[in-house]
Image (tube, rainbow, N blue to C red; front, top):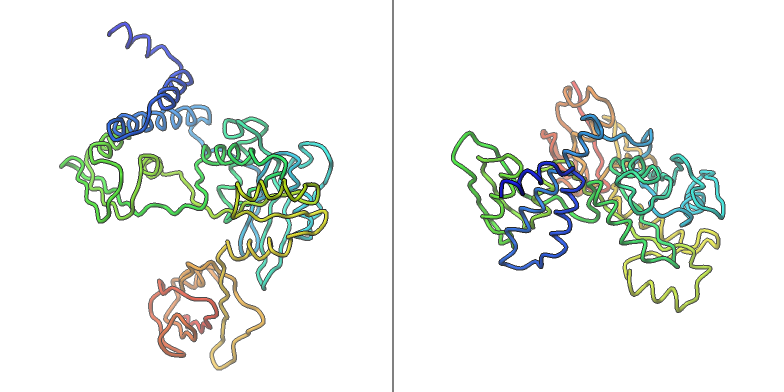
Amino acid sequence: MVQDASLDLRKSAGDKIKDLEDELKKTKYNKRTQHHIGLVKAKLARLKERREARSSGGKKGEGFSVRKTGDGTAVLLGFPSVGKSTLLNALTNAHSPVGAYAFTTLTVIPGLLEYNQAKIQILDVPGIVAGAAAGTGRGKEVLQVIRTADLVIMLLDVFHPEHYAVLLKEVNETGVRLNLRKPDVRITKTIRGGIRIGRTVQCPIADETIRGILREFRVSNADVLIRTPINEDQLIDLLEGITVYLPAITVVTKIDLASPQQIQAVHKQFPGALFVSAEANKGIDDLKLAIYEKLDLIRIYMKEVGKKADMDEPMIMFRSATLRSVCEKLHRDFVTKFRFARIWGSSVKFPGQKVLRLDHQLKDGDVIELRIS
């Protein structure tokens, strides 16, 4: 046993990671193995976290330098030659280089989509391949860009639908979860008392496994309150604290080159996907609408005291917008100088209602009259 332990200590982080990954592959998940698999996943996450910290010198990974503009940002993500540049040019006023060969785009090229009074930034990034999250083909830099976006547009060549699984794996490896909500779980560290677990819902992960995973992350004393069902992977995501949750759209390209039978076969695999041809201008209007709706934007109209609201120039905000976020977007001093607001619209009970709370959530079409000291 001592000899085995010493051999394990001499293994590199990469070897240990491979051993744990192999163990996960060969272990069938069931109620009896759940605890063991949960601990293996936690150890694997910790090893990858330490390896990443060492390789980056403790600094966060750097991506391409992109200045965010507009009311929301969407990234076109796909394999080389999937048609990102052509699609960007069809959606926006950008002039991204287009060519019938791989890796045409070597940097991030922005374009601006104007739709339903919103200005949406669309980013064309270099294509990624298998191993991108580990650094293949500048993949780390590309994947860092999507972490700061508001929407991911996953592009699939109609002739290569198998690329979707590869793209999703690389996105997951970089700490991004698509079309998932952050679980409502509160972990409050305490000085003593061990790990106490409370639940308001049923979830498949056992208390013993929760405690084991927390201890693997050096948490010995904490109050855990679970309000939504979670599994081992979601708990690890919360403990790592780097996971980003983003909406995504799947778009199948080059349908002008495919037969109806080929398109139908891919549609069966991805029933919620949009099918487009940028070259033939097919499906582009549907994609513009989908981008706007998936960003979940609302229109807010500002009104000066004693004047009518300007209904031609709305302020575009995300649906979660509050009076605080409106103040922050208008001027950084407005939050501290805020006295109250009068609001006309569906977020209040009666027209012109006086609202004193900055955390008041707004709704599409609200008219706001701010009172600032």
